[in-house]
Structure formats: structure tokens, C-alpha cells
Length: 199
Image (cartoon, rainbow, N blue to C red):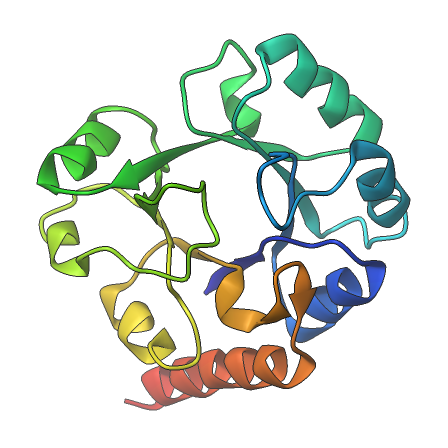
């Protein structure tokens, strides 16, 4: 299972995510978020991360030019956005905030690998999940976000998303990861995958 650990604000947490097997880490550049990080600080972390670890920037209010500027400054591999943008589609993760079936249908008509997140007043990191029954019948690979944590990771793996995006479920507090939760989370994924191979 591909895992993005989002809401990274420290090098320590980014390296821990990498060591445990994360495929990507996410930096939130939405100033109203409790997990916001300034581009300069994100760059200090980014340049010290392994080359194979994808660096993703989460954007909400910035225009395309600002997104490109921050992408270059930080050394981002991908950008996660909540609207259509005129940026190289190979680096764009298009996120959709899900309230009902119509939002899932919109995502299916849009991005090839849509990220499906829970609709909330804030963008991401709400700790709440939407009704995953809405995903039944979805015919394309998707990234699942919203309310994923130790208590439901096995259910998430049964759903079978292409990747998962987790933030608040692994935190000690907003912007600071909990080492024990992180270790247990990745161990459960490995155990599930091992059992699946043996079935």
C-alpha cells in the first residue's frame, strides 16, 4: 500500500515516515491550516530527505504561478490541489471533498487518480471520514484520505485504494506526529499485506 504522511512540519517526522515505509510526505501551504508550514521551512526539510521519497505540496488558495514558485523553491515532486489548474498534469494530484455520491461521480469524470477527502470547513486534517460505501462501483484507481488511523486501517485496506493519505490519525497534536502511532500504523499495513499473500 502506498502511503502519504501529510501535515509534515519537522525533519524528524519526515525521516520517520520514510524509514517506516511511506512513499510520500506532504507539506501544507494553506495558511489557515494548523499544519501550515512556510515554504522556506519546508525547503530546509525537503533538501535533507531521501531522493526516492515523494515530496507533495498541498495548496488551497494560491494561484498557478504561486504554486509553481513554491514547487520550485521547496523541490516538490507533486502538488495536491482542490481545483483545476494549468500545471503539468503529471505532477498534479486533484483532490475532491466528498459529501455525497455526486462528488465521487465528479471525481471519476475528472482526474485519473483522484484524491477523495472528507468535506469539512477546513481543508484536510479533520480526522473525519466520509461514507466509504459511496466508493462502491468506482471504476478507476483513487487515493483515499479523511479519518484514516489505527482504528480503521484494516477496513481501508479491504476497500483497496491505490494509495492512502493520512495526517491527523497519526498525530500527537496538529503538525506533530506520534512515533508510537506511526510505528503501529505501518506495522498493521505490513501484517495485513503479509497475511494477504499467505491466503
